[in-house]
Image (cartoon, rainbow over all chains, first blue to last red; front, side, top):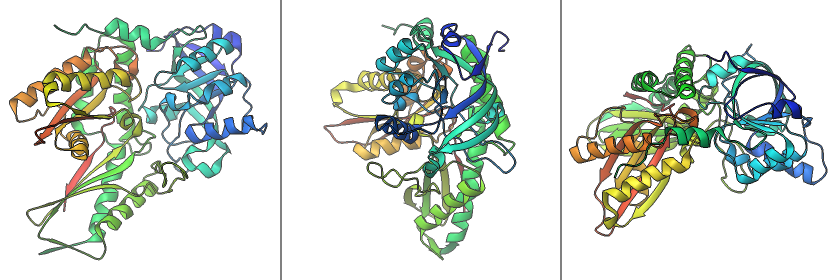
Length: 189
Length: 281
């Protein structure tokens, strides 16, 4: 099913990203960070004020997610992507700080696509709503910041072969546009 | 009068939310299997099979279907010959929500203040409670945990009556086209037509509760459901937005009387995790 998937190890460097094309299947391993709406707002506010953020952003991959609570003895609950456009106002500032990959679902703003191209980054997609399966890719999870946000706290994850698809590559090409055009049928007269 | 204790309502609500969070309804499973069999787009077909495998994994009761365990939407049809004893209805429902989200390891996603202080309430309360008083001495409870990736794509329009069927179709299909991959396609669409501003939105939400494939009993509205499904699937968005022929699994339309000047229409999106569970006390 994913026999042609490319294996990647996070954090990512620019060459890793530039080798990827929209539509490529990827199996991502390594250390990634989980942050969504409120954590993004705080990180960008901290950067504007010259204050530290909870993660080392250089080469970082940020997963837009908020997992369900882990049962005792398990590393994580269900985890899957949240819709990315809500992070669009914050993403360029983080890409400028060295963030190399984002994982989410849904299209991005023209500003984010420009910033992806400028910084040699990549936007990965995870299918939404298969969060019980995705939990299998997570070996460990640790809260690293903004714990008061509860389900929106920032996490560090150790992931193993997380199945992703390249949605927007470092040249700005989008799987969404090409996929929809291929399957769109003209409206009947 | 038949007496029903608030504790029974709490226990039912708690049980139903856990059931809904881990078990996809049978009509959804069947429709997803049919979709996986006909999808010609390879990446979308992979997603459809992943969704089915996810449902099997979730049904083991360890990991819920989705990390977004939803806003706790509750519909209650309260028989007018029922006397609720030992507590208030809203409090009993909220206690059930509190218990389900804690004991079921479900994510709490509600903030108390939408604008200024977006602090999480920590127990997924309050529930969004819809109550109708109906004849009889029963209490029918339906829970529908609602994820917001899809809720955020929902839309309402107060069309002019002259807009007619074409206006309704253009509005619904346009909303799905704009939503793209955001609402976790393949989606289920609840469409409300008629009533008033808030009434049409509730019609759309209630439409999501009807099993997929069960058509509106009015033949013209049943035809409209079929047409909307076909036109939405012609958009080519596909599962996860990866391009494909199955963008929606079902379209359910509910209608109600409206004003001579109006043609309200609302579309409530639900992702493929169209979760709900019900019981009668």
